[in-house]
Length: 285
Image 1 (cartoon, helix red, strand yellow):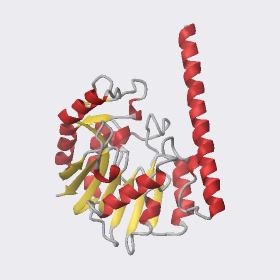
Image 2: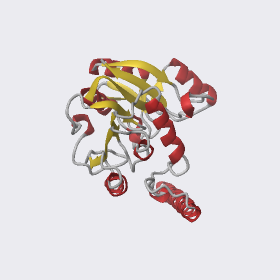
Image 3: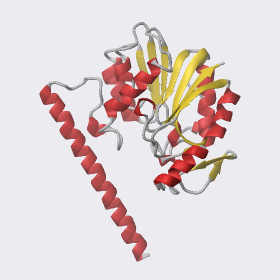
Image 4: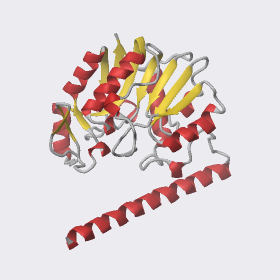
């Protein structure tokens, strides 16, 4: 019992130090930008962002906006849905792209939605945000709704483009399947879903072995569909799905996969726009 307690205490102290470093690094960067007059009023303060977002916030946002315009074929008057919008990481730069278009975003984190409503909607009324009280073991443990039964609060055939940036990477297969189905429902015919995932196939597994990555645990199942995760306690920290199963989900929902732009996460040296995760581009039939 004593060794376990010591291990838990050590882990807690380490996590706490990591959080403090992230917090103060983000606060310092925010203060520097403010002094230089480089502070973007629509960008959430770095010290409030999730771990891992502070350093790559702008870079990742730019990649997604570029992808939306390129493979997503987003027009200036397009209508966009951002699943898991967070504190407006993609919404902020999209305000400079959508002229005559509109944007809807939802997220499970209340403070992210409050920020977006106060800072983005107040300046850009066509950009709207709402809270989805969905249970998630990583981001919202006390949520009142299950993701696998959640219905997007939008009409059928409403959007030209749906984005899911690092959302399915934190969801189990049964939940992903539901979200893919709902995304297809709210897309207009010919509209596109851009979603990032960690996809397992023969090439990926070979690269993981060659590079020595140890991010994957044993195969588990959800709704009869296999998946893997390197975290046995909270698998949602990183969900890895098999590409064949994802393709089946898309096909069943009425989405045709146009392309898969494989990311760097498994050891690849280059990727589309520098994406770390795999980007799946699908079109509503």
